[in-house]
Length: 394
Image 1: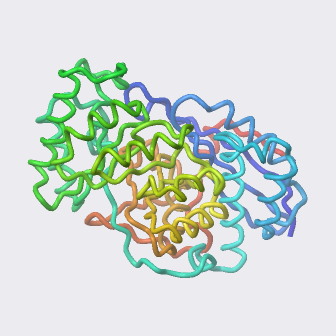
Image 2 (image 1 turned 180 degrees about the vertical axis):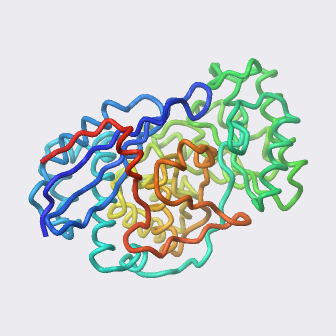
């Protein structure tokens, strides 16, 4: 079997997923000489990397034309070692490798007439506990930025009504005028601390003792402000504290973990085994959050999760992508013994996102199950492809 061509599908969703956030999912369709195709997704759908995402796919897809798609390990190593920039890594490089790798696993599953999770080792987890993610954008078929604590209480009740017993919130992400991405000072002033604490407290009161709360800072806080805010919410029993600062200076996570009582998590901006190694060796992270769309795909994601198991680190795959990304994540989470919880993003509820692909996989009563179709069990619709900007590499 040989790869004959690859379609880069820049899906035009027609708008923003939420106020202030761009949304541009990009899929790959890998075609073979035996008529079997595989779908992947590059994990750069949101914010400002759209042209870089298209560009790296164009560059890397040319390299693998004519190769056997079943040799996914060889293709991964070729892209890593033979492209010069591959061994330097980084967001865009690993994202391009990821999209290709997911598509190759989809092909492999279809050739074997098995779901990908069977090829990865079979089911360890029959059901996947799931949390409602980014509730500062509300929860449901529409999205808006929430401001007042009573709105955070109400969105918690919405999630609970659908069976969730865990939510994730960025309590400082929306300013008092309803704008996303507050301007963070070097130290948080009283008014900013107060509203952040009140929002988390409203979730705790509405959710009761059984509700787990993940607090997400999107790396907007620095070491000092992350410690400052964490100490204010420690008595609200947070499940874990996500991206308290950016991960390029790994030693800062160790300082934060030493000074706060909430377990730390990070990963959507950490890439490959090499990137995760120091965080595991110093045990600064209790939970890792690799994104299969930018950390190296299923091939690398499985290795990262296996390495985390050695260090007693739990796994919650980061997931802010389209339906292909969701399907890929479910397969790996079904297999790994150190799975903790699945992220179900507010964006995954939006119709324009759901309609891009054939199947609408949603959790039931707060739990997901993995698709049993051959491959990853998800495909882009013909309607989406017709509307998209498509670049074909031959």
